[in-house]
Length: 358
Image (cartoon, rainbow, N blue to C red):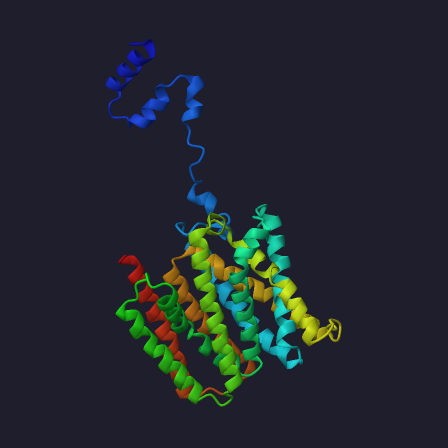
């Protein structure tokens, strides 16, 4: 037995209450102690909370920070809807609005990456894999902007609450291995009933607006399906940080949107009025903030909590739009909105329970 082994046995006898892992490090020669440090260990929670944009889902920020993030998310969503409606009132095409929103988001997200000192580039092959997600996301917002040109913000946000119905259909069709519980099916009933009531009592109901909002639901439900499949098969996208994800998602859509705008509207006159420029900057900035904070919230809380928070975000957006534009709302309309949002909340809880039971 060597001198080092005899020494460690004597120390273990005197300090038997010390955990072996700590004792092994303490009794090692100075030249080997550094090699025992776990340099791959995750940083402390306090260090992780310094950057909520890069927070893993297992960490939870302080109540104050989480409240501020939710408040910013709700406000950005409300201002996005109202400023989009204001731009449409200035005879701005939905295509041009979507292009300005995506251009602003691509620029601001890249600036955020530079400020944080963290940016994950993608190869041409990875952009090709990311293309279905990007196209579903792009056409989803394009259809949403088209729907806002056909009806009130409050009514279109209510129609958007029908997205879980399309998600359920796509999961059943393309992911048969996913378990759908009875409670998830039952939660769809108040969603459909609430939207039906809201549609029947909506004074400015438009068939075109209804179809555009439904198309947006199809696109966003498809995007969720594409993201799930992509993250399940590719480690790069599974570990992609929130800001880089937002940047690539908007950057990849710019060539297509630019081509569509030039083909449909020609070269737009961006200096036609100061009001137009003001609303364009506000709308693009709020659009980026809304989408970025939505992803930050998803990183901070569980998916079920995010879905429930998203349901109440719709309520905040609807109330804000009614106050700003003074749209008439009947009791039947309010009851339909409450029923639809309540159904979304029940669906989110049922989906979370189904996931926890696996």
